[in-house]
Length: 337
Image (cartoon, rainbow, N blue to C red; front, top):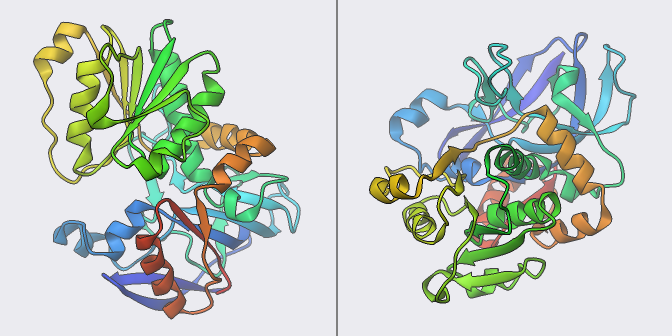
C-alpha cells in the first residue's frame, strides 16, 4: 500500500514522499492530532549542527501523536479505537537498561520518520489505548510520559527525605513535570523557579513560585529537577547545586546544544547524585495515560495546549511551526493530510 509521508528536506522546506508499506503485519493508525516539540523546531529552524542535518534529513517530523486504529492484523486493538503512539523503537533487550536508553534503539522523528504521515504502522507494544481524554490533550501524551519517566526514576533513586522538591524552569516541560510531581509526590512541598513572571503565574497548583534572582534567604530543597534547557541549563544547574541539601538527587532534563560547566567541587562536597533523564518507554506512557484520564489533571494540561487550525496542506505545516514559535507553551493541531 502506498503511504504519504511529509518530510522536512531542509530548514523550512517540506516535501511529499511516497512509500510502499506492508500494512498486514502491524497496527495501522490514522494520526488525528499532533503536537510540536522543541526538538522538531530545532530541525525546522535549522538550529542543529549542519552535519547532523545532512545526516538526518530528509525526515518526517513530530513524535507526539494520538490517533485512531484503522486496522490491526494482530488482534490487539479494535478498529476505531483511540490510541497514543510510542515513538521509541527498542533496541537490544537488556533487563538492566530502560528501553529508551538501550543500545540500538531508535526514536521516530530523530533519524527515522516521525508521525507526519497519512498512516502509521507500529507493533502493538508501541501503541497504548486511552479513553476520555480530549484529542488535543492526548496528543501531548509523549511529553507527559517524559515527565513520568523522570519522576519515576527520582522516586527510585532519591533518599526518603522528600519534604521539598524544586523544579527549575518555567516552560512547558517544567509545567508538565510539576503536574506529574504534584501527583506522584503528594506529600512534598513543590517549588518552581523560573525567569518569566508571566509563565510562573500559570503554576497555580504548586506550593511556591520564585523568580530565579529573588530566591528568599534560607531557601533549600531536598531534591530537584532541571527543566530549563538551552542557555538556561547552566544557570539552573548552578542554582540547584547552591540550594539543594546534601545528598540530594538532581534530575537533568533540559537539552542544551552547548557544553554546560558545573561546579564539581560543590557536587562532591554535598555528595549529590546527578541523573540524566530523557524520553520514555511503554510503562511511562501507560502511567501518563492513567494520569491524563483524570479530569483534574487533564484540566491542568489544557492550560498549556494551544490548538492551531487543522493541517490540510504543506503550507499549513509551515504555518503551524511558525505559530508555535509565538506560543508560550505547546501547539497541537488536527492532522487532515
